[in-house]
Length: 312
Image (cartoon, rainbow, N blue to C red; front, side):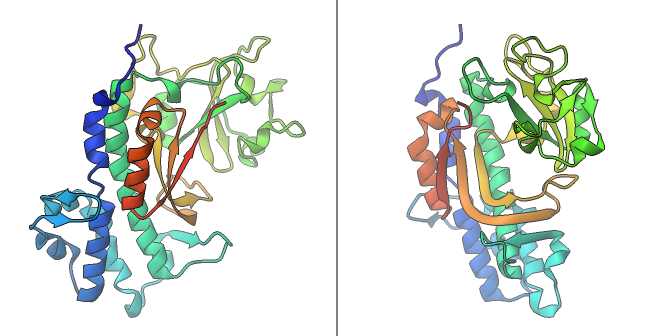
């Protein structure tokens, strides 16, 4: 029987929540704007050796923390070249506001920087918080009584090689999205069954997970009461060190930018909508424990905090 997780078990992850890097990144961005397009981000960070106090916390070694995100912050140097002929499409991405109108190049670049910084930071935070919970929430399909017929795990093309599952890559699947394909009037059929029933499905629709290539890329479909093939009975993941990107970022997500398209590989190009939010899924045990801490983290990052359930 699994031990019930307690808040004190989550101290490592909570310590990281208490030191968000985005407030420091905002300072770097501001200093870069003051310094002009010839400035070097690395030089600005090198000067930030003294403790910095914000309304949220005190950073004793801000330069050391920021160096972990230097690659992302150096995109500022591309932003700084706007007046010298730099064009937004050089980022290989398009960013629009909630009305669908393209944002200016500086806003687009800043949002992309902040999105990537937050994704990197949250990967470590989620990893620290997830491990003590011994939870398999992200690795299983809907349980009995849930409204959903299936759960979807988005994958990059190279990540599909981790799973020895049936693949479906057809013109019909590529013309759809998984959720769109689950509607009553247009369910994608595979061998005479709804795609989400899985191979060898029983009368309840429980079957083996399968891989599908949709309009927005590959995903694993987990039917009712199924589990990821990499999940062992003891709850361990057999591909943990090579696990997909989506598995590295449960269940607190950077939602500064919402992908409107998922290119191959994901997150390197495509179209995004500016959201300036942090999304946390309340099905997750550590999100349930830490809603106040997550909301405070979002506020420190100047983001709206969205708390919502994913399963039901």
